[in-house]
Amino acid sequence: MALDDYFLLGRSGLRVSRLALGTMNFGTGGFHAAYGKTEDEARPIFRRYLEEGGNLIDTADFYTAGESETIIGRLVAEAGVRDRVVLTTKAANSVDPGDPNAGGNGRKHLVRAVEASLRRLGTDHVDLFLLHTWDRITPVEEVLRTFDDLARAGKIRHAGLSDVPAWHAARAQTLAEAHSLTPVISLQLPYSLVDRAIEAEHVPVGQELGLGVTAWSPLGGGFLTGKYRHSDAGLTGEGRLAGAASSWTARQWELLEVVEAAADELGVTMAQVALNWVANRPGIGAAIVGASSAEQLGASVAALDFELPAHLRAELDRASAEPPASVYRMFTPDYQEWLVSPRVKVGDKPPGYRPVVRNWVQR
Image 1: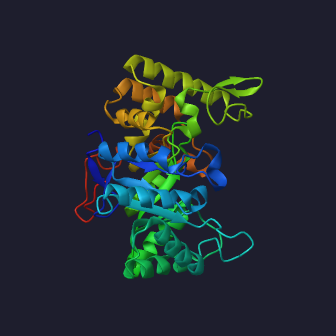
Image 2: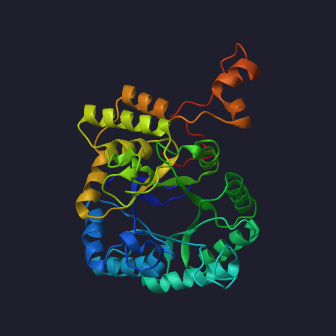
């Protein structure tokens, strides 16, 4: 099995596979209906993921208006794997437009959302519950207390955050540690060769404070698969983005050529190159992959079957690098060696170094 290597997620004892199964397209209702799958269409995708050794299932109450959770609950029960899988769901988006407490990060909504998710999933607990997105106004102390109470009630096993500022994640984890509350073990964020913004702060926060990053959209919304091309009429190719106005930059189209060259040299697909790159980046606990068929999922799993040679990895790193902006320019090795520590060799610990006081595994 290609997914039978498991790693601890953040500073926790929770073992997860390197690829998580994203189920945003499980169901045919709500916001994601345009590319949704029926339960019968989702079943072979789910079964293939289990057969490959995968155990991290990612859903949310917002996906297909709750239908994703319902389908996942049925498929998990049907396969008899509730104790085997790490079931993850998220909440923050509104479930009742017009009701100010039917969305956001407040205690009233989060408790309501968890209980509704448990009913749809057909289980008495989720293994990992994430704040789906930051609402900008709810005190982080309230979020942490809610996480802690839900964990003490046995409704969630672990807590995490998704799409929040790095300072918010740092404050949350620091408060949790200081007050012996349920810690945050995961950060779910967008990350790919065309979007490396989280490297500035989020990834270091995760590495320093024990939050394993799970990367969503590792293929850049499908751009890195190579199935789209630029034309005066917008994006052309087969996929849900076809015909849309192109927002990709000239630099990103040049990056696509580098990805294509790497794929040709290795005899793999462009999507596999892009996914392999993400899954093997520092601080990344798992990459989240969706699929429209069992065969497509199998191709994603095969992305872990090869190693990117050093020269190709260096070329991908160079082509996708985002020059630091503003104050971040001061935190680069070159700047620090020039001004902070001139003529002195100062650097981070070697990659294999593990402090005794922080003995957790994180890719």
